[in-house]
Length: 384
Image 1 (cartoon, rainbow, N blue to C red):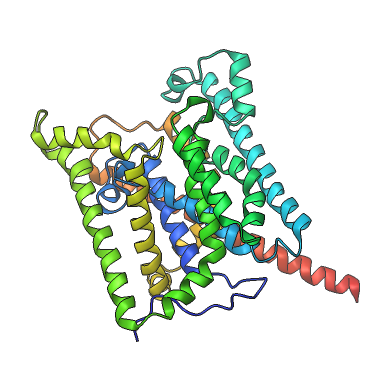
Image 2 (image 1 turned 45 degrees about the vertical axis):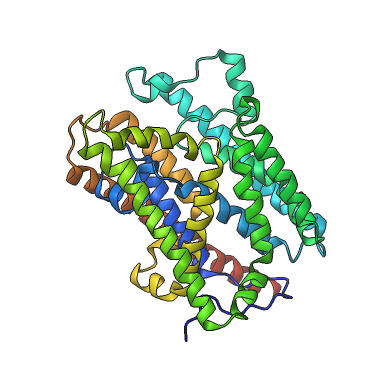
């Protein structure tokens, strides 16, 4: 029987964990990390991600899943334990804020101590007072930890959005989010938060209603499910291949002045990443829907054939992101790639870095689980 989704119990306050979301978030993180690595292009550039140059990127997917999980996990509980959920989300926001400002200050000081490094060339140059103000207000990030700034700000407003959605006022969240994106996405004072909040806030709405959406889909006939699945995946696949050919392959094989490259340059503004242009949002929706449906349908097979790698990246996402930022900053300073490094060399370096991050996350998670068991056993003994 063809079925993209399984049934869920919508009335449960504590919803079941969705394996596909961990796998998908792990995939997005691998693409993000491989895109940030200075050793490029590698074979991974042509297989996944396209070096962040495509119609849409893993970054939008990552923020969508982050918001989706907030809505999915906290939505059913926020009306019953309002204060507890608000405090819990704000504690997460505080942690993200501390990490974001700490890493920016750390990397800035580090770069100053290494004035001959590539990283030093990208230092903030608007004066010390402006530097500290922009850092503390999350408008400036240095290094590869910039996502933390946006995530911290979004989590500050997240409990209000979740509460409204749970009260049946999702339309208010949607209208406010759309208005902020439409009117402020190109206003410098509100960058990068105004454009990127769109995917996070709509992720919250999607996460809250996800069991209902899956149940609605399951109530369709199998043939209709199949048609929708095939159509979305086909559109996503064709547009993905087209963007890969235009933005990755064409610049490598064509000479300057070629009509295709001219067409590519004319197309770029319509898929602007910094301001999340409308066409980019539309393509991102299709790609995310196709990926979620495929991962949801084949989550067990994907988990089996990836041997838990995607799950480790997905479940340890905050650690992976922070650790990758630190690791890549060190590499950018001390291990600058040669000018003519080969694709094979770049691929090997990329895989090595991903392996280091994976094992660090795996053993960190393993140690955490052991610690929880020990604390659990200890507490049981003390109670007895």
